[in-house]
Length: 451
Ligand SMILES: [Zn+2]
Image (cartoon, rainbow, N blue to C red; front, side, top):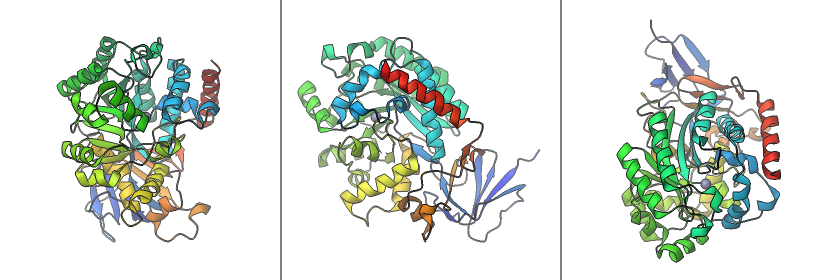
């Protein structure tokens, strides 16, 4: 039986994230893109289905490379609204320690649904809380990802350095090195998919220099090498962290990273703000990826990531919403707008274009996750697409559709396709009762903060 071919026809505008022209649209067969069409070009073979995209701006599905799904339960919580990172964390740790599998399931579903509606098709999460009863946290997240039909890089986070040993988190939130490594290996063996079209992937992600031991950093790097998975952590987010590294290890953050065997192309780092020129050169030479998180960095007043210098040095750059309690949204298209604007403050309007910001959110992010099958529109890539309509009041009077998407503040996709299947149609997620989800999740959020 011949496969069904679908023509996404004549989009209003298209961003391919590469030099290819797809102004006539693209053809999808099963889960992949099989043809890109120039203006007025017809598909080479007959298509059984056609989707008229003349009212849509077409993008590769957006890719989020840093998040903490569970934090959707502590968004805009009054005690931390005006705090910078370290006091923000210290106030939140005891609340987060009460997380349960049921609450994590709801939080993950909310974060994923919100991302999906914003045009995101692949999401990375960094989960590092495993209090008693929540040992299966990543398994819970796998179920949520499958339910929504998205792709995810679930990074098995960890905290092993409690207050008693000079770390930041309370002692009852940390795990032993043995427990962390055993669970990491279990998760990779059970869930990590390889090759094109993978839905679930696992990475190893000790939380930050101030919450894990150097031993667990080294052991995670060794396991990642052995089992061929990626490494992720927070680095150089604030000057408090830099001071901590100097005091605790006698090293700056990048020296610390190198000392534990992490300075290489397998690693992607969240934030990457406080680097000097020499460190940027080393990160670039090593091919270490940087996930820029503009909303979170502004929200916590952490600083501005030197994105342009990092890319010039050779470091891949992607985007992350990082939250949800430091953003406090999970919206990838808004994140691209914020990246455009904060980077203009640092590098000027001419250097930072809407296409460049969208490139970080798509192809750049895919590189951070080590994926070559998503993040751009080209023959052979997965059919992961985000389509936005410009029929809202905010777009009225706009001229260039692609620029309008970011400049006028698009916040919701009209259609999203993942692996050839529509997951969002007319701005709604297929098969999800959003009102019920909000009710259940809000109740869980109230319970969590009230203890
Ligand atoms: Zn984070």
